Each structure stands twice: as structure tokens, then as C-alpha cells.
Length: 526
Image (cartoon, rainbow, N blue to C red; front, side, top):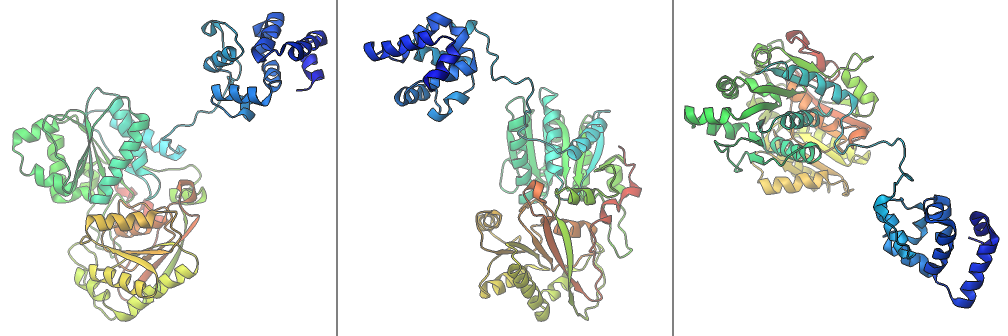
């Protein structure tokens, strides 16, 4: 700051001339100079006025600026932008040798009248709307039940975790039982709760992993998040005597069933209904992108059990002005815009659908050994990589085929791996982490059979090959969902799904209208 500007600010060139002369003749340091100014003009007139305070800091020499900046824990170049807090004010006064009771001063400068506070675990508006509707139903009465119906990739888990946090915060204690099938889906639930509760929780709560070889369910557990694998829980439940079942059920306040269309399996439904019967106060929330188990061949499995289990209440994702929420999510960048592609494979296999109305395993295994079919899949992977795709998932018709395709791709010089139920857990984790690593620019093709349809989130996946034919809307939706993450959730703007179409074998390959496929069977409470 030059002599004229400083004189103009102080309003008296004489005092500045005197200070300059004294500095030269008596070697006044910054404290002495400041005290002359303060005693003449007053502390509030200078230090509490940002413009005047900045003039003082600008008048310091480089050594003095460095000392002050060091004490304020900031960069010397940022002294004039520092927030004027009580702590900083105390340091500032002390530096200039001013004795003052900072606690008696009111701090108003640099505190805006309005500012935007960003949450650490936010929801999008359409997620908040779905959360509110589910919460309304669950709070109506004890034993309330509802299905949350949101498309794959639209944030079902995140939305549900907000509901879990509110549920736990509204009571002093309670066990939330999160049910899921498979290691990946269970771990996804545990990770999501960790993130949600660390931002939204009001007390310390244990998170118990109860799947595979992990954990247990203590009978006296009264307050926790218990993420349980369906198979392990059923195995334990079937061995507990009535008293042990009652003691556990009495502490449960909320059950959340991830991929809830699986809940009508006889063993799982029996377990859930027994829990609800032993404790009528338990609330039940289902999560699904496909709240039914229908197929496309006309042999439709009854969905009445599923509708009944959740009280006929379904909250679908709805957006004003859009007939389909999927269209909205794609237009707004929450979901990728999907290009559908087909690989036609001539086959003379005669297919009779199995007991579950889907393609029998024997047919799937035969398809997995067809030479021409496999060569077409490998060629499609090659084409995808040539087009710039870095993350590609192949859904194979068998374990053998998954391993074979990965091996064939490696012989072509591509990085590839096979994940099946036979894959060691550590090896599986290594390949999945490598596939999800955004810093790895090398194209990676991940082949799998029966593993990555749920609980696997790799947003950068931009190409999927469905080489496993199915008549199930549910299974097809799960496979195509691996490529649905849009740019607003860390994914891609566009993705491509290539389905192997075997002649004479019925398959499902449509994504927009599937969302409303089951609406007629539900009340659609909103």
C-alpha cells in the first residue's frame, strides 16, 4: 500500500508522516506502529473495518506478513481474505501487541445473511418423494408393509438408508434387519449403512455382518443394524427353538428385504411371516426394480403372494410429466441412455421351459459350448473395445462358458476375468476391485455366471453382452441394469446392451415398459 492510499484511509497525512519519520529514526517495529495508530484512531475503527484492516496488513513488509500468516495458519497472499473469527481476531491483536477481551466483541463481518449448506449424504428430489410416501405408510400403524419400486440404478438402497436412519433416530433402541441374497448384495447394504449413519445417525450403533462365515445374531441384541444373508439366516432360524425366535423377534422394529421379489420363496416367506407373527409391531419394507416374477412366454407365475406379503402397498417412482420414470431418469442423466443391439445365433435346439418357466440349465450349458456362438461373443467384445469401451460385462449361460470366454479373450491379448459361484472370495474381490478401478485405463472384460446380476455397482460399465437367454423380466432387468448408471451418479451418458438372440428360444429384451408390468396387481398407494 503506497503512502497516499494509507494516508487517505487514516484521514490524516500528518500522522502517517510522523510514523514514517519515527520508523526511520527510531526503528519502530510493526507492533509499535500499530499501537500508535490504534491509540490514535481506536481498535474498532481499524481492526473491525475490513478495508482498514487490509491496509494495515498490506503495509507490513514481507517478513512481517510471513510471521502473521504463519500464526493465522494461512498463506501470506491470503491475509486480506481471511475470515474474521474470534480465534483469528485474537491472533491478529496479539501479533500487534494489543490487549483486548475478544469474547466481549461481536463478530459480524464475513458472516453472510444467506448461504447454501450442502448435505453429506443427499437425496435427489425424486428419491425424497419416494422416501416420504414409504414413510407415510410405515408410520400409519404397527405391522405396516410397503414395497418401494424404483428402477435399477435409481438409488433404492440410498433412499432406503435414509428411511433406516430416520427410523432408528425416532426410537431409543431397535434392531433393523436388512435381508439380502449373496455376498455382494450384503456387503453393498453394509457399506451403504456405514455411509448413511455416519452422516445421519444420532448415536453409536453396531453394524453386524451376518452372512457367509461372518457374525451371528445374539438373542439379547436390542439396538443395531443387522445385515443378514438369506441362506445363513434361514439356516440359523430353522435351528432356533421357539423361545430363541421370540427373543430375537421382539427386538426387531423394521425389516428391509432387498430384491424383495425373492421374498416369496417358500423358506424365506415362512421365516418373514413367523417374525411378523411373533412381533406384530415389526414394519416391513421391500426394495425392488421388478416387483413380480413374471415371464414373457404366457406362463405367468402368480405374483399374488408377493402382493399379499407387502399388504398390496407399492410406492413406485413417479415424476410429473413423464409416463415412464426410466425416461425421466435417462433424460436427466441419472441413468445412461441405452442402445440395444442383437447378436443372432441360429440354433436348432428344442426348448421346453422348466418348472420356473425359464430356460432349463441343460439348454444353457449346450448353448455355452456352441463354437459359432462363442466366437460371435468374442468378436462383439473386440468390437466394443475398438469403439473405446473400457468396462464390459458378459453374462454367460454357464460356469464353463464364463471361464471359456475369459480364456479366449486373454488369448486375443485382452484383460479379462471370470467370476462364478466357484471363484474364491479373495480372487473375486481382486477382480471386482480391478474392474471398478477408474484409474485403470486398460479395457477389462468381466465374464460371469449368476453372480453380477445384483449387488455389483461399477458405474463406468458402458457395454454389456447378455449371452444368457432368459424369459424372466426380473433377470433381464438385473443384467441390463449393470450398464444403467448415468453421469449424475458417476456413470456414463450412453451405454450399449447386446443380447444374443438364439432362434426359437423366447427371450425378454425391452426396458422402458417393464417398469409398469405389475401395476395392475398392486394398489399403488401414493
